[in-house]
Amino acid sequence: MRSLADLIRRSLRLPVFLPLLALSLVATWFGLKPSQVHFAALTDGQSFVDVQPGLTVASLIVQAGSYTPEAVHYYLQWSGFDFAWPLLTFTAMMFIAGWLFRFLPSRRQGLFTLVVAVGYAAVLMDWGENVGFVWVVLHPEPPPLSVAGLAVSLHTAKLFFLAVFNLACVAVLFWAAGRKLMKSPA
Image 1 (cartoon, helix red, strand yellow):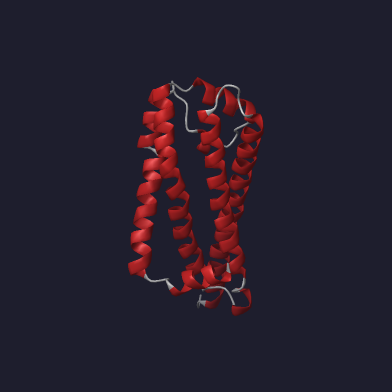
Image 2 (cartoon, one colour):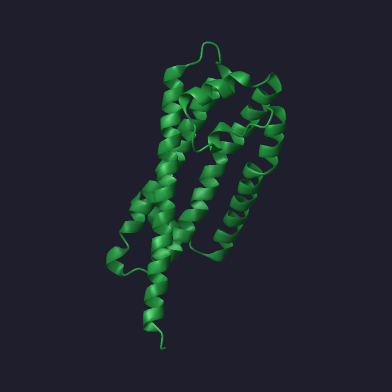
């Protein structure tokens, strides 16, 4: 993780960051808007299980079992996209975190490696959740309860890691802003 954190720090340049950010924003827009609208039309208003915070094994099994062949086909296509989306988004977020960490004292710089580890752990959890969800969607009868349980656990853990990562970034931002305000003349 240290080498990945160092690579991100060395790459903190606008010609690298701006295209990455643009791709991440476009992917997020597609993942949260037009693809969701189309999927909802195919499933009588359901959203992708991947973006449901309160997902349970029971609700996953019920939803996956209700998908029409057309909805299953679209979900599989979208799942391919959903493997790239978290990697793009988290890499862009790592660039933002790397930039924010420049405002911390040198003794705190080592924490960036931990932030990178937490961020990419969430990506790995997302990928594991994706594999589990696809398996459940492709095998509705009989429902694979153990796979569904693992997928929902990874989904919940991913959401927790996302919350920790986002709170850490906000805390660093407020800390840096507070230090800047305390140093500026009144």
